[in-house]
Length: 492
Image (cartoon, rainbow, N blue to C red):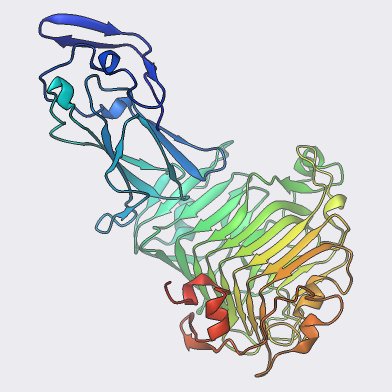
């Protein structure tokens, strides 16, 4: 049964008699029809008022609770919840037109989603009350509120030169129009203000970068729902990145944020690339500019990240003097259209470990590197997958590699060895990974100190690059076990 509660006073006038109901609550539905009728008979009922419906997301973002005050004389409610990211193609969440005898319902919630809630009051034959003629419809979304919408066709560098991002203690959100086309030919500084640059979830914005970086002085930075083309990038590839930390390092801020001289971006303010496609990458994806920036959460989720370079000889994600606490890659594809340089590592952390940072605002007891449900193709072939001088190698650190397809990436037989830094010190978890190199299974990936899970896949994943960031996966075992980037798997 469903619970319902009426939290405020409601006054109803029926057959000339004013009736006042105070803090009425019910458990397990309509246990006493006389209470719930309260003299409401022979009427056509109305659905709950929009302003009376309470929508509450759970703290962890996984659930959405919808509740409304009881409609006196009702025989229940009909409830539906839809995802309307694409308004022309609504997707039902849970049971459509579910019949409820209470006034609270819970549904699964996804991040960054537009919803439509539909509630209709049902009739009650006992009191000759008819159902509501119309349902209450409520639009709801859990997206970060928009600071400004940037018009289609804008040069972002010029836009933010004319209207710089202000100092703010709350996160700002700049929205790019659905399907819009944008350019960038110089740096976009965010200072120490956390900022999200967001396109449209269904119809991504398109950004062409010919020079410059999103320049971060020590704040959360999120790129979301956009396709970024770096094919025509003509800047200095060793001093630019999609995300670049500022070389103008604020020593005063560092002293207040860490006892060891780091500017710390807390775990609650992620640096993230989500639901983006990047192609033609020739420069860094991320670079700390050789300064002591410490990032609590670095996330790459639901992305296609494509390089096209045989000469870039630095790590794609490079912490030269800085540190990352939790590095996560999930549901993404990483590829290079050509065979890359042998020094083009996936990730490098050159100095220290998480315990070196010592933030003043939160405890960093361990680091983690988590790579799951992702596909690697020539990313990069012949180079180290990971390199560090201590990071992700302490006994309290956690390294996870699960449900991934790894084709011609890293050194032959050395992808896992480099993630583990050639030892067994950090806590390591592996499972259902598919390894393939030069047309064969690289047995070195499962030797002592590497993937010892016993669940690895030795068959050819039959992963084919079709161009323009698109792949075909035909390996029967990989499909059966649902491994790699989910977008290349057939629909179940």
